Length: 360
Image 1 (spheres, rainbow, N blue to C red):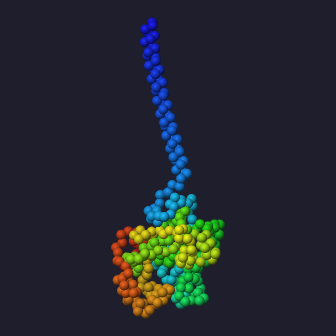
Image 2 (image 1 turned 90 degrees about the vertical axis):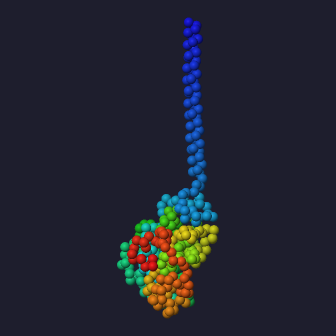
Image 3 (image 1 turned 90 degrees about the horizontal axis):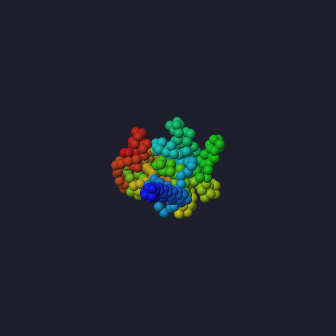
């Protein structure tokens, strides 16, 4: 009997030992998992409290060197984007621009004057061809300037007509929005450029859907001339995009948009940035990318009246210049290139035969 108890107790003690050991190991595992979970939660909480940079397109992140990338945040709702420019007779370029940007621009403000930059009377080409642009009519605000500058010497008309983009265009945008029970916000954006200067649509898309970037956006554009295949050797960087609030504040509420182009409405340099660089451009400047007949009109219209000379305006001469890439000083200013991607030419040009001459 004694032997049985001793023998039975040994088995009982051994069983009890393994049971206790099992529960001890389980408790250690549970505690370890609990501590790991708490650590992860703590790390997640720590990360949420930090300004962790969001994933940005390469062209944007490269352009923000020297700025606080952590300040860039997505917007809950995209802001409004106004695209403003003056127009002479570049109707193909206008159509190309609108077609390329129509999905990201809310309103195109087109300023057309009854006088050229050289202060001579001119035809209202857009007014005469409105039917061609009828399908874009809900997005187009057409401003007509009836007179030139009071004291004209050289640049005064260009300044007056470009100022009309903000002075009258913004008024019209506000009126349209009011009719829809909406308001123009100080954060909404306006871009000032020439009709042949425009960014890639994804650049505008980024500006509309993000916040925290510098107040003045400059654009480093791919500068070609006569066609998209004559690549100029120099850079083309323009002061282009500001928000409506800053435009009002820096111009004493005149909304004189020429100041954006001229000096960036004096926004401090440290609060500006340039999107793009050579080889990774933010858009296009296709200078003189028009037919010879329109080149002649431009010579008779734009501010550089020193080029308004008869021997420059011969259609034969203009055709020769376009073919050979020869500038008006007799020098070939660029290199003839082969298109390799949509970075070289806008998608609209590739898809539309109407613009084939821009690839001559």
